[in-house]
Image (cartoon, rainbow, N blue to C red; front, side, top):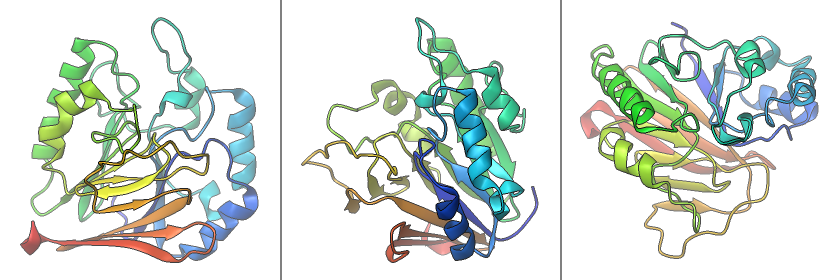
Length: 259
């Protein structure tokens, strides 16, 4: 993908966005050339929710815009070993440049000024999985073009803002590596928090209780939020807006000189 323009980034939408809301996002984001989800877009790979999602996009640019889909835990079927339904990859045909056993759900896409890297954190179910994805991620971050920003989208956060939702193995394996990324978008906890390079996006569903001792630079509760990501040459900008009235609530501007 070599297009310029903004990328709309959404948190856990859980099949809850209506056609009117998609149309509104369409009108508020005229410069986007792609959009991304940090997971839990659909419920359990259910055929009904896939069709509902596609139906709600009708008549908006999102019907044809490129999408960067990230897998969340709600997209997986539960069981002794979680499985990703075939309908997910049939609906979201992502690049197959990821590690073995994660092709199509862990991948990267190059824009002129940034490399966007998607990690399937729900599929990490064994030491072998973690090792493969870590090795691939390290190489993928290192081999981006000189001057490209590194942007990661993933479902489970490295630092959780919610009580009782700390992801021990995600933090243990990926913290030091992802600390070198420019921006990391996460979901799962249904609350907005910024602790750079990490930005955790709020869900349209109910939030989880916040930890009182969170050392975050910005926390917003009970408010669905969408973010616009823009990368141009030496500047990476993330602007986050309340979905209910489109007011700007947070802004991050990174320049090559500041990194």
